[in-house]
Amino acid sequence: MKKICFHIQKGGVGKTSISCSVAHCFARKKIPTILVDCDPQGNATSWLFPHDIPFDITDVLFRGMPLAKALIPLNENLTLLPVIAIGGQLKELSETKLAQNPRAFEFLLADLKAMGFQYAILDCSPSFSLLERAVIGAVDEVINPLSPEFFSIDGIELFTSILEDVQRANRRKIRNDKIVINMLNKSFARHKAFAETLQKWNYRVFTIPQDSKIAESQIARQSIFDYEPKAKSIIAFETLSNAILEDR
Image (cartoon, rainbow, N blue to C red; front, side, top):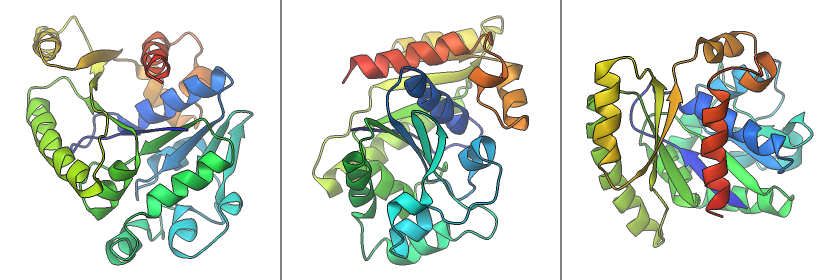
């Protein structure tokens, strides 16, 4: 099972929209995929499953709940491990209990692999607390989403430094060679200049165009593929997902 996390220490860059859409791309290719919501705000969960949730990732990680009880099938090939946002305790328990079991996410992902999932997509918050460090330390690859503004370059440099610390702590190499510029409008000179600057860096750069249908799909609690199959961002999501699959 390949394990991928979308992360950057900056909010509002579209980590959740990219994570959920790439997970749907894999599922549409009939690849058994698990979407793991690791964000205490639970944005992925509230987007794709806006219903009452009896158990969540906190119950599995810290309370010994059987993993199967917390999983929510979204379609034939896509399953969600949710987070309870309102009244949930992921952030609190991560801060108090992860230090006692820093390999909790590693064990969780091993259990998911044993269940037959071929890809795991983990959606994180924009923090770099013990929770995010534990998630990143357990995955194979981290992909950085950015908004098309020059402050994002500082975010990449900061992330690279912290990733080196995580790799040393876990004594393993974590792939980090892809950047996704989200909400790109090439008719804006500053967006175009930003994209051209990143093309000179040692990353594979992917772009997701500005697309109001993404926000509309979130309001409708549907994936972009179900809400608007002809949305202009779909080709970009498919290009990104294909590149990830080619790296396997």
